Length: 267
Image 1 (tube, helix red, strand yellow):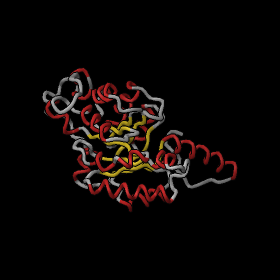
Image 2 (cartoon, helix red, strand yellow):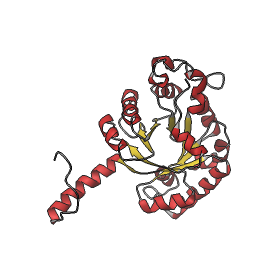
Image 3 (cartoon, rainbow, N blue to C red):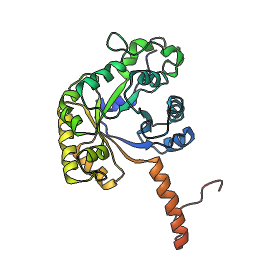
Image 4 (cartoon, rainbow, N blue to C red):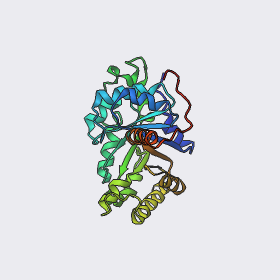
């Protein structure tokens, strides 16, 4: 039996757009709730969410029973950290702040077993191999790993063509907020110059035949990025949705709004 199919990576080959959401509450319970919402993929955020490897692993497990594909963003692209999260069963990784082809090459090697990489051979102890019940996991795992690198600085844009040309890089994800900050527009991811840089990056990524990803909290920007050619995109976060929903509920009550929501069973 081979390694489980990576449905997210398979969608790239089939040219299917994939809609996602950020999961940053660092709670398996919350991740399971979000996983029932029907998104194609969910990003478990280990960079800005207060997560560690066991907590990331628990959220992968919580999402696994849904139709959403769990993607993990690690805080940094350290080989030892990549090894651990892959052994827990993650198949799609987003690595932040990639700024050079040398860095990207090291990441490609980190997610692959020898002789093509340096991933440590210990998956028999983890969920990735169903605790050694997948007999040919080692021989098939490389093909099902999806590596996405995050381009979010002027240095990253400068190295984009070389990074995108690498075998083993499946997608490039443009980070508008950090890119805007690095370009001198802190807090302005929708600035025209930032948008122009993203459009240029998308065009260059497409020329290399790789998938283009992005994230925004603005639906207006989301539709614009989709028109630019985004292949996978997140349109919100669990944190901001919780903030907005709880605030709006309180304000609606105080203003006398009743809304049209149906009662939920049990409450």
